[in-house]
Length: 307
Image (tube, rainbow, N blue to C red; front, top):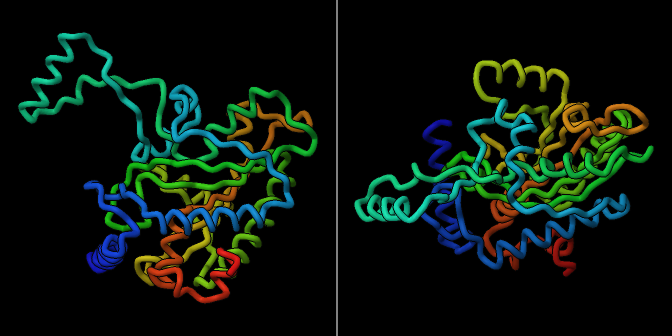
């Protein structure tokens, strides 16, 4: 990213902090949120639910951590090791504790004695879903549809306020046949664009790819784009020249179905999801309509508050 774009990100972040919408916690990409910021997130979440209400998705809420063995099996570390967040803890005895306190008092690194626990931080709201559904056995002929909402973590500290390390993701996930999940993704591509245009922010939808790691990652990224497996809804937030992905629409083909032995109609199931970056949408609204929702266009307030 250029120095000019870095400055625009930092300028917008300073304004958010000055207005008290975000609260500095001393780590780039980790912020407290004000009550007003949380209210905007909650109002948007209700609007998303209204758009998906007729589908009667099964509501599931997972914590922001998941099983380390399941995380390892998911393949996330093969593609995104740079983003993963593990949970470590002290597991020593009294002597180890005394050594830890000495290191802490001397300002030395006390973390080398920490050991990995059986949990990792959830990288995307859907990751705990697939093993949970697999334990139920074969899916019904109509497949499954799930409404998820979770805090997630990705290690990418930045001055761009839209690139938080801890953030919330709301997802609808479809598991079923290829035809079922492709139709689901197309439906939400149309719904997602209509939803965001109703909030009067500038949007564009484009083919995208995930940030795969390493030399092999370039090939994976190209394949993902060539097959149009991922689309993103982009909105300018910190700057006009580098719009931010606020919604994503992903077709995983049979990747998770094969990985977790998810079966539908005696065949390996396919999966697709639509993900809403909740903080990013809130930031887009503050960026384009101002820092005080009382001054937002009446039509936007009506959509979110019912005014």
